[in-house]
Image 1 (cartoon, rainbow, N blue to C red):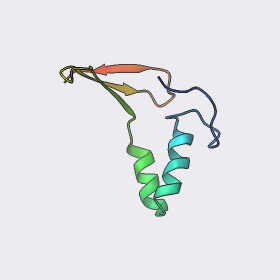
Image 2 (cartoon, helix red, strand yellow):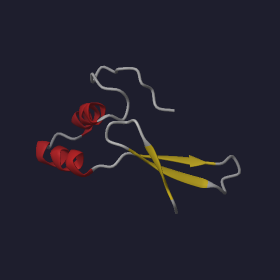
Image 3 (tube, helix red, strand yellow):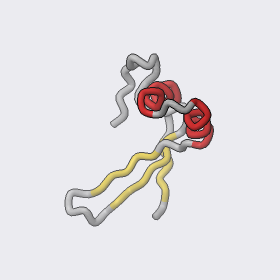
Image 4 (cartoon, rainbow, N blue to C red):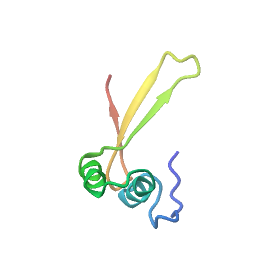
Length: 71
């Protein structure tokens, strides 16, 4: 489950602010960071305990909706 707690980035986990803050820590090239931010799509994946069932969900940019992606 996504934490709705506001982090040191001033955004909740997986929001654009949170992603941008974390990208700044690992990617120094601002042009590359901006390109990633412009094109990223956050996804969640889930795997059953037996490893046979995989589900993928796309998370909306406002972090309020999940859409099940059929594999």
